[in-house]
Length: 75
Image 1 (cartoon, rainbow, N blue to C red):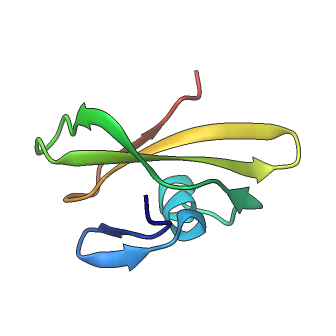
Image 2 (cartoon, rainbow, N blue to C red):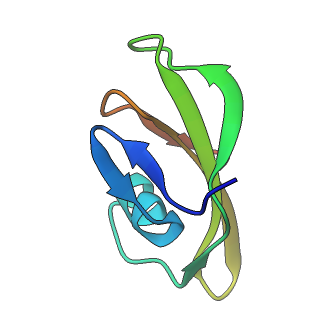
């Protein structure tokens, strides 16, 4: 699986994808994977990325490849 993916017409790295989801800088990010779910807004494909927004937090973020929708596994 390639490290970079096309999201909303742009090629993004795992770190950039995490920053789009978080709307802020992140410390590091893992490889982008298929989330095996459809976007609740537009029905498009969703990808996921695990990342660390801080030293003490690990988050899995989800982002639609076609629209602005994103979500995280935070409670």
